[in-house]
Image (spheres, rainbow, N blue to C red):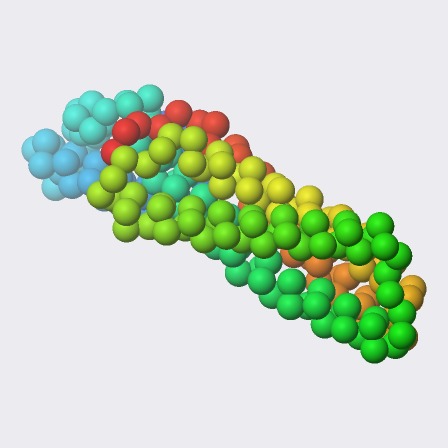
Length: 226
């Protein structure tokens, strides 16, 4: 979809377009933040303009009062980065427990059929399950830290990056688990259940990986202190 053209005689919209291009994070929050800034700029420009509608000079004065993109972007980016980190942490925290239950049902189905995974594969499954559970625990802690506490206490600068790598670790564990489930599907008589679990794991792997990638990108951008 082609981006709308910004009129050459509209300094405010051009300013907001530059800010929007600089920011990265959840689209809905970014749009909300830019819209609120637009309202503030327009209100200030109206106060500075002798006419009913703000002219270009008044718009430029309003922009100077609010500050250039280089000054505004870091504080805006901080909010976007925290929100993206919370989204990633919430995704990991909600998905992993559901998948652990799913994997447990597959294991019960395999045992009920009188089959067992080879010993080395069972060790791999146990370690992957433990790793996935650990990422869910870290995600829960990160979610609580970036919630109401983030507005009262200084947020560790590297926390969003930690959340991003937690999500990446969870995604890797899910990818390897999908391969394990494919092996289990060969042994299980109830292969539709195992195949479904494998498909769900792959879908959730992609979802967590995408969220972690976005969080990692946001975490590397400069932000200001609260």
